[in-house]
Image (tube, rainbow, N blue to C red):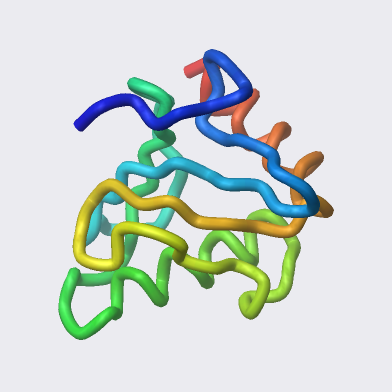
Length: 108
């Protein structure tokens, strides 16, 4: 899969207006939900749910909401409902929390 178009070179997100687009490579069926490394313009997110009946997508949204301290209703799966390569949009208010998480995981 090609690297997503990104106005923030070297990062896995893009800001447009009052929304952040976060580019994700999902790894469903993991033992726990957690961020992984950043590769090819996407952050790997391990998801503690099987990719069946939308469970992994729901867990991804819940994990991002809890980790980034935003309401789950504001975490929107914009692309990739049935793909490991996903784009999730978040409110701009999540930027600081997101950057802290990304910094922590880019140093791994």
